[in-house]
Image (cartoon, rainbow, N blue to C red; front, side, top):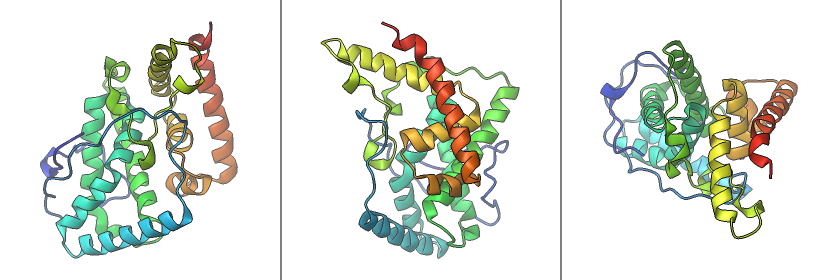
Length: 252
């Protein structure tokens, strides 16, 4: 996805609400781009309680090291979460180049704002909150500049981030019968990605978090700050809106 995160690349017009800019040096180059490959399922692979506990413990160790100035800990955090964050950002923005820039900005905000993270709640929900806020701010900025999504959303397999990292592509190949399954499935995948990018940002975010990345309601509540009733009703409306947009593609 990207070879390095550098503080000079950070945009000044779209800041994540959770991260502070104060007193941080530029982070060093980060891990290589995420591996790619479509998955035939609607949500990421469920995480066991044991795996969740192990990941949380590892995150706590890395955060502690990062606060102590260990940049290798930052590299590990980026390597762990870059697939998920790029998957979220790409589906929110709908343009690969823009998504790469925003994903870098998210991790820069994490690097600079790690001192503000007090360890309340899980680290990755804090990270997702920064990413969500950065995306929404960027969408407002791009809307004001009449930004048009590039056609790469129809062409880029890089949007198909790994399911086991929470970014499973919404694939319909497994439900399309006959020898045309691959062709039709790919067409429907592209259509779904394109139509998600046309939803209202709040609806877009919930569809991606719940139906693509497979986060629990509790996790989404922590990320968005919504009340449970509001979350469920808004998600229901988002699904109806997406279903309506996809109906032309489902016709025989």
